[in-house]
Amino acid sequence: MIKNLVRKNILNLKPYSSARNKFIDGILLDANENPYDLFGEEYAKNLNRYPDPNHTKLREKLAEYYDISKNNLFAGSGSDEVIDLMVRIFCEPGKDNVIVPEPTYGMYKVACDIHDVDYQSVNLNLDFELDIDLILERCDENSKLIFLCSPNNPTGNLLNINKITQLAENFKGIIVIDEAYVEYSESHKSIDDLKQYDNVVRMRTFSKAWGLAGLRIGYCFAHQEIIELLYTIKSPYNLNKYSQMKAIDALSNESIMLKNRAFILEERKKIISFLKEWNYTLEVYRSDANFVLFRTSVADRLFNYLVNKGIIIRDRGNQVNLNNCLRVSVGTSDENRIFMEAIREFI
Ligand SMILES: *Cc1c(COP(=O)(O)O)cnc(C)c1O
Image 1 (cartoon, rainbow, N blue to C red):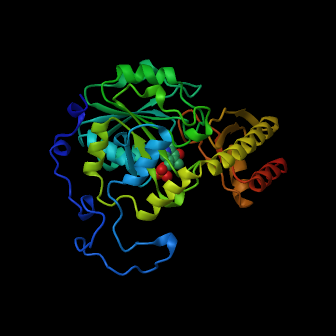
Image 2: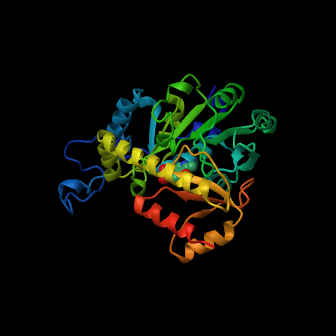
Image 3: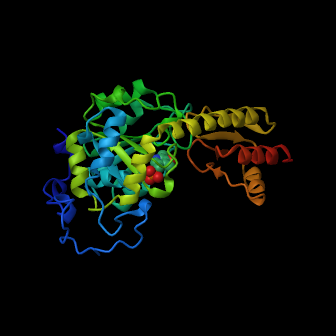
Protein backbone atom coordinates (compact mmCIF):
# COMPACT_ATOMS: atom_id res chain seq x y z
CA MET A 1 0.00 0.00 0.00
CA ILE A 2 2.84 2.40 0.86
CA LYS A 3 4.70 1.38 -2.32
CA ASN A 4 1.79 2.64 -4.44
CA LEU A 5 2.38 6.13 -3.11
CA VAL A 6 6.10 6.23 -3.87
CA ARG A 7 7.54 7.95 -6.95
CA LYS A 8 8.55 5.36 -9.55
CA ASN A 9 12.11 6.64 -9.95
CA ILE A 10 12.60 6.36 -6.19
CA LEU A 11 11.18 2.83 -6.05
CA ASN A 12 13.55 1.78 -8.82
CA LEU A 13 16.56 3.61 -7.43
CA LYS A 14 19.72 1.67 -6.80
CA PRO A 15 21.33 3.51 -3.88
CA TYR A 16 24.93 4.67 -3.78
CA SER A 17 26.90 1.95 -2.10
CA SER A 18 29.24 3.58 0.37
CA ALA A 19 32.36 1.87 1.59
CA ARG A 20 31.26 1.95 5.21
CA ASN A 21 27.99 0.16 4.48
CA LYS A 22 29.44 -3.32 4.80
CA PHE A 23 32.69 -3.10 6.76
CA ILE A 24 33.25 -0.96 9.82
CA ASP A 25 36.30 -2.64 11.37
CA GLY A 26 39.53 -4.03 9.93
CA ILE A 27 42.38 -2.57 7.93
CA LEU A 28 40.29 0.03 6.19
CA LEU A 29 41.78 0.74 2.79
CA ASP A 30 38.47 1.05 1.01
CA ALA A 31 37.40 4.68 1.30
CA ASN A 32 40.45 6.81 0.44
CA GLU A 33 40.49 8.30 3.90
CA ASN A 34 43.56 9.67 5.62
CA PRO A 35 44.90 6.97 7.96
CA TYR A 36 46.19 9.66 10.35
CA ASP A 37 43.81 11.14 12.88
CA LEU A 38 44.23 14.94 13.03
CA PHE A 39 43.11 15.55 16.63
CA GLY A 40 43.15 12.24 18.41
CA GLU A 41 41.53 13.73 21.49
CA GLU A 42 38.98 11.50 23.13
CA TYR A 43 36.06 13.72 22.14
CA ALA A 44 37.02 13.64 18.50
CA LYS A 45 38.50 10.22 17.98
CA ASN A 46 38.67 8.70 14.52
CA LEU A 47 37.34 11.77 12.78
CA ASN A 48 39.55 10.77 9.86
CA ARG A 49 37.07 7.95 9.18
CA TYR A 50 33.65 8.28 7.54
CA PRO A 51 30.70 7.96 9.90
CA ASP A 52 28.35 4.97 10.02
CA PRO A 53 25.88 5.57 7.16
CA ASN A 54 23.29 3.39 8.91
CA HIS A 55 23.48 5.19 12.29
CA THR A 56 23.42 1.76 13.90
CA LYS A 57 24.38 2.67 17.45
CA LEU A 58 22.21 5.77 17.57
CA ARG A 59 19.20 3.85 16.27
CA GLU A 60 19.80 1.08 18.77
CA LYS A 61 19.90 3.65 21.54
CA LEU A 62 16.73 5.38 20.31
CA ALA A 63 15.04 1.97 19.96
CA GLU A 64 15.85 1.18 23.56
CA TYR A 65 14.77 4.64 24.75
CA TYR A 66 11.40 4.46 23.02
CA ASP A 67 10.96 0.70 23.24
CA ILE A 68 10.43 0.18 19.53
CA SER A 69 12.35 -1.55 16.75
CA LYS A 70 15.42 0.03 15.23
CA ASN A 71 13.84 -0.85 11.87
CA ASN A 72 11.23 1.82 12.49
CA LEU A 73 13.81 4.55 13.05
CA PHE A 74 15.65 6.91 10.72
CA ALA A 75 18.13 9.60 11.71
CA GLY A 76 18.85 12.70 9.68
CA SER A 77 20.70 15.97 9.69
CA GLY A 78 17.93 17.76 11.58
CA SER A 79 14.22 17.22 11.03
CA ASP A 80 14.66 19.59 8.12
CA GLU A 81 16.38 16.78 6.21
CA VAL A 82 13.55 14.38 7.01
CA ILE A 83 10.99 16.90 5.71
CA ASP A 84 12.94 17.23 2.47
CA LEU A 85 13.37 13.48 2.03
CA MET A 86 9.67 12.80 2.58
CA VAL A 87 8.79 15.21 -0.22
CA ARG A 88 11.39 13.59 -2.49
CA ILE A 89 10.14 10.06 -1.83
CA PHE A 90 6.43 10.64 -2.32
CA CYS A 91 5.87 13.71 -4.48
CA GLU A 92 6.18 13.83 -8.24
CA PRO A 93 7.28 17.39 -9.16
CA GLY A 94 4.71 19.31 -11.15
CA LYS A 95 2.02 16.75 -10.38
CA ASP A 96 1.52 15.79 -6.73
CA ASN A 97 0.48 18.02 -3.89
CA VAL A 98 1.02 18.36 -0.16
CA ILE A 99 -1.61 19.59 2.31
CA VAL A 100 -0.57 21.74 5.27
CA PRO A 101 -2.78 23.31 7.95
CA GLU A 102 -1.65 26.88 8.67
CA PRO A 103 -0.39 28.91 10.44
CA THR A 104 2.59 26.65 10.95
CA TYR A 105 6.31 26.09 10.45
CA GLY A 106 7.66 27.48 7.17
CA MET A 107 9.95 24.63 6.10
CA TYR A 108 7.18 22.43 4.67
CA LYS A 109 6.44 25.06 2.05
CA VAL A 110 10.11 25.66 1.30
CA ALA A 111 10.70 21.93 0.77
CA CYS A 112 7.70 21.77 -1.60
CA ASP A 113 8.80 24.87 -3.51
CA ILE A 114 12.32 23.49 -3.96
CA HIS A 115 10.93 20.32 -5.51
CA ASP A 116 8.22 22.06 -7.53
CA VAL A 117 5.52 20.28 -5.57
CA ASP A 118 2.12 21.95 -5.20
CA TYR A 119 1.73 23.24 -1.64
CA GLN A 120 -1.88 23.51 -0.50
CA SER A 121 -2.52 25.37 2.71
CA VAL A 122 -5.70 24.83 4.70
CA ASN A 123 -6.53 27.05 7.65
CA LEU A 124 -6.55 25.71 11.16
CA ASN A 125 -9.70 26.86 12.96
CA LEU A 126 -9.56 29.86 15.29
CA ASP A 127 -8.55 27.63 18.21
CA PHE A 128 -5.62 26.48 16.04
CA GLU A 129 -7.15 23.02 15.80
CA LEU A 130 -7.50 20.80 12.74
CA ASP A 131 -10.62 21.16 10.63
CA ILE A 132 -10.85 17.58 9.38
CA ASP A 133 -13.63 18.17 6.86
CA LEU A 134 -11.81 21.11 5.32
CA ILE A 135 -8.59 19.07 5.01
CA LEU A 136 -10.26 16.00 3.50
CA GLU A 137 -12.23 18.17 1.06
CA ARG A 138 -8.97 19.61 -0.20
CA CYS A 139 -7.37 16.19 -0.83
CA ASP A 140 -7.40 14.64 -4.27
CA GLU A 141 -5.73 11.62 -5.87
CA ASN A 142 -2.45 13.54 -6.08
CA SER A 143 -2.33 14.45 -2.39
CA LYS A 144 0.59 12.44 -1.07
CA LEU A 145 1.49 14.07 2.21
CA ILE A 146 -0.10 16.04 5.02
CA PHE A 147 2.33 17.81 7.34
CA LEU A 148 1.04 18.40 10.86
CA CYS A 149 3.04 20.19 13.50
CA SER A 150 2.23 19.21 17.08
CA PRO A 151 2.86 21.09 19.30
CA ASN A 152 2.40 23.58 16.51
CA ASN A 153 4.93 26.29 15.78
CA PRO A 154 4.19 29.22 16.17
CA THR A 155 0.85 28.75 17.95
CA GLY A 156 2.21 26.48 20.70
CA ASN A 157 -0.68 24.03 21.07
CA LEU A 158 -0.62 20.27 20.82
CA LEU A 159 -3.07 19.13 18.13
CA ASN A 160 -6.01 17.03 19.26
CA ILE A 161 -5.02 13.37 19.00
CA ASN A 162 -8.52 12.16 18.12
CA LYS A 163 -8.57 14.43 15.11
CA ILE A 164 -5.15 13.21 14.01
CA THR A 165 -6.44 9.64 14.32
CA GLN A 166 -9.49 10.53 12.25
CA LEU A 167 -7.21 11.94 9.59
CA ALA A 168 -4.93 8.87 9.65
CA GLU A 169 -7.95 6.67 9.06
CA ASN A 170 -9.37 8.70 6.20
CA PHE A 171 -6.39 10.08 4.31
CA LYS A 172 -4.99 7.84 1.57
CA GLY A 173 -1.51 9.31 1.69
CA ILE A 174 1.12 9.75 4.40
CA ILE A 175 0.69 11.96 7.46
CA VAL A 176 3.95 13.43 8.74
CA ILE A 177 3.70 14.78 12.29
CA ASP A 178 6.45 17.16 13.29
CA GLU A 179 6.93 16.78 17.04
CA ALA A 180 9.94 19.03 17.49
CA TYR A 181 8.52 20.40 20.77
CA VAL A 182 6.82 17.30 22.07
CA GLU A 183 9.12 16.99 25.10
CA TYR A 184 7.56 20.16 26.51
CA SER A 185 4.05 18.77 26.29
CA GLU A 186 2.11 16.37 28.49
CA SER A 187 2.58 13.42 26.15
CA HIS A 188 6.28 13.89 26.03
CA LYS A 189 7.60 10.39 25.53
CA SER A 190 4.78 8.13 24.43
CA ILE A 191 4.53 7.00 20.83
CA ASP A 192 1.93 4.29 21.38
CA ASP A 193 -1.10 6.32 20.40
CA LEU A 194 -0.57 6.21 16.62
CA LYS A 195 1.47 3.01 16.39
CA GLN A 196 -1.14 1.06 14.45
CA TYR A 197 -1.19 3.47 11.50
CA ASP A 198 1.24 2.51 8.73
CA ASN A 199 0.71 5.89 7.07
CA VAL A 200 1.87 7.99 10.03
CA VAL A 201 5.44 9.27 10.32
CA ARG A 202 6.49 11.12 13.47
CA MET A 203 9.54 13.38 13.39
CA ARG A 204 11.47 14.44 16.45
CA THR A 205 14.69 16.31 16.99
CA PHE A 206 17.61 16.90 19.31
CA SER A 207 17.48 20.61 18.49
CA LYS A 208 15.00 21.80 21.10
CA ALA A 209 14.50 20.07 24.48
CA TRP A 210 17.69 18.06 24.05
CA GLY A 211 19.69 21.23 23.51
CA LEU A 212 21.78 20.12 20.52
CA ALA A 213 20.56 22.44 17.75
CA GLY A 214 24.15 23.06 16.65
CA LEU A 215 24.75 19.41 15.86
CA ARG A 216 21.78 18.99 13.48
CA ILE A 217 20.22 15.71 14.55
CA GLY A 218 16.63 14.77 13.78
CA TYR A 219 14.92 11.42 13.57
CA CYS A 220 11.62 9.84 12.73
CA PHE A 221 9.49 6.82 13.54
CA ALA A 222 7.81 5.19 10.56
CA HIS A 223 6.74 1.94 8.94
CA GLN A 224 9.77 -0.13 7.98
CA GLU A 225 9.15 0.33 4.24
CA ILE A 226 9.35 4.11 4.65
CA ILE A 227 12.49 3.80 6.77
CA GLU A 228 14.12 1.70 4.04
CA LEU A 229 13.21 4.31 1.43
CA LEU A 230 14.71 7.06 3.58
CA TYR A 231 17.97 5.10 3.89
CA THR A 232 17.93 4.45 0.15
CA ILE A 233 17.77 8.08 -0.91
CA LYS A 234 19.58 10.07 1.78
CA SER A 235 23.09 11.23 1.03
CA PRO A 236 25.49 8.50 2.18
CA TYR A 237 27.02 10.25 5.18
CA ASN A 238 24.16 12.55 6.14
CA LEU A 239 24.82 12.48 9.87
CA ASN A 240 28.34 13.17 11.05
CA LYS A 241 30.18 11.05 13.56
CA TYR A 242 30.27 13.58 16.37
CA SER A 243 26.53 14.20 16.13
CA GLN A 244 25.76 10.48 16.23
CA MET A 245 27.95 10.16 19.31
CA LYS A 246 26.56 13.15 21.21
CA ALA A 247 22.96 12.15 20.52
CA ILE A 248 23.67 8.81 22.20
CA ASP A 249 25.28 10.64 25.14
CA ALA A 250 22.24 12.89 25.44
CA LEU A 251 19.86 9.92 25.62
CA SER A 252 22.07 8.33 28.26
CA ASN A 253 21.67 11.52 30.29
CA GLU A 254 17.94 12.00 30.08
CA SER A 255 17.91 13.50 33.58
CA ILE A 256 19.70 16.61 32.29
CA MET A 257 17.06 17.12 29.64
CA LEU A 258 14.28 16.59 32.20
CA LYS A 259 15.83 19.05 34.61
CA ASN A 260 16.11 21.75 31.94
CA ARG A 261 12.62 20.96 30.80
CA ALA A 262 11.17 21.41 34.28
CA PHE A 263 12.98 24.71 34.55
CA ILE A 264 11.71 25.95 31.21
CA LEU A 265 8.15 24.96 32.05
CA GLU A 266 8.40 27.00 35.27
CA GLU A 267 9.72 29.99 33.33
CA ARG A 268 7.01 29.58 30.73
CA LYS A 269 4.41 29.84 33.48
CA LYS A 270 5.95 33.13 34.66
CA ILE A 271 6.00 34.63 31.17
CA ILE A 272 2.40 33.60 30.53
CA SER A 273 1.07 35.09 33.77
CA PHE A 274 3.11 38.25 33.21
CA LEU A 275 1.74 38.71 29.69
CA LYS A 276 -1.81 38.01 30.84
CA GLU A 277 -1.54 40.90 33.30
CA TRP A 278 -0.04 43.37 30.86
CA ASN A 279 -2.28 46.23 29.71
CA TYR A 280 -1.72 45.88 25.99
CA THR A 281 -2.23 42.13 25.78
CA LEU A 282 -5.26 40.99 23.82
CA GLU A 283 -4.65 37.26 24.19
CA VAL A 284 -2.01 34.84 25.44
CA TYR A 285 -2.28 31.43 23.87
CA ARG A 286 -1.90 28.12 25.63
CA SER A 287 1.56 26.64 25.13
CA ASP A 288 2.66 23.02 25.05
CA ALA A 289 6.10 24.13 23.84
CA ASN A 290 9.04 26.29 24.95
CA PHE A 291 7.63 29.48 23.49
CA VAL A 292 4.58 31.64 23.98
CA LEU A 293 2.41 33.26 21.33
CA PHE A 294 0.55 36.40 22.32
CA ARG A 295 -1.58 38.98 20.61
CA THR A 296 -1.18 42.62 21.51
CA SER A 297 -2.65 45.90 20.35
CA VAL A 298 0.89 47.29 20.01
CA ALA A 299 2.66 44.39 18.23
CA ASP A 300 4.77 46.36 15.74
CA ARG A 301 5.79 49.04 18.22
CA LEU A 302 6.65 46.51 20.91
CA PHE A 303 8.66 44.38 18.51
CA ASN A 304 10.78 47.35 17.39
CA TYR A 305 11.11 48.69 20.92
CA LEU A 306 12.51 45.33 22.06
CA VAL A 307 14.87 45.10 19.08
CA ASN A 308 16.26 48.51 20.05
CA LYS A 309 16.97 47.10 23.48
CA GLY A 310 18.72 44.12 21.94
CA ILE A 311 15.89 41.73 22.80
CA ILE A 312 14.83 39.73 19.78
CA ILE A 313 11.48 37.97 19.60
CA ARG A 314 9.57 36.80 16.54
CA ASP A 315 6.89 38.81 14.75
CA ARG A 316 4.33 36.31 13.44
CA GLY A 317 1.76 38.89 12.37
CA ASN A 318 2.07 38.04 8.69
CA GLN A 319 0.78 34.50 9.08
CA VAL A 320 -2.85 33.63 8.56
CA ASN A 321 -5.06 34.41 11.59
CA LEU A 322 -2.06 35.77 13.51
CA ASN A 323 -2.57 39.52 13.10
CA ASN A 324 -0.63 41.38 15.79
CA CYS A 325 0.84 38.18 17.20
CA LEU A 326 4.34 37.89 18.61
CA ARG A 327 6.17 34.74 19.65
CA VAL A 328 8.71 34.69 22.44
CA SER A 329 10.97 31.75 23.23
CA VAL A 330 11.51 30.85 26.87
CA GLY A 331 15.08 31.78 27.71
CA THR A 332 17.14 31.62 30.90
CA SER A 333 15.54 33.19 33.94
CA ASP A 334 17.81 36.23 33.54
CA GLU A 335 16.84 36.64 29.90
CA ASN A 336 13.16 36.26 30.71
CA ARG A 337 13.40 38.75 33.56
CA ILE A 338 15.05 41.32 31.27
CA PHE A 339 12.38 40.69 28.64
CA MET A 340 9.58 41.23 31.17
CA GLU A 341 11.20 44.30 32.74
CA ALA A 342 11.58 45.88 29.32
CA ILE A 343 7.91 45.29 28.59
CA ARG A 344 6.93 46.73 31.96
CA GLU A 345 8.74 49.95 31.03
CA PHE A 346 7.13 50.15 27.58
CA ILE A 347 4.79 53.12 27.08
C1 LIG B 1 12.85 24.00 15.40
C2 LIG B 1 11.92 23.15 14.61
C3 LIG B 1 12.37 21.97 14.01
C4 LIG B 1 13.77 21.54 14.19
O1 LIG B 1 14.38 21.31 13.01
P1 LIG B 1 15.85 20.67 13.05
O2 LIG B 1 16.17 20.61 11.61
O3 LIG B 1 15.68 19.32 13.68
O4 LIG B 1 16.72 21.56 13.86
C5 LIG B 1 11.48 21.20 13.31
N1 LIG B 1 10.19 21.54 13.22
C6 LIG B 1 9.71 22.64 13.80
C7 LIG B 1 8.28 22.96 13.72
C8 LIG B 1 10.57 23.48 14.50
O5 LIG B 1 10.09 24.61 15.05
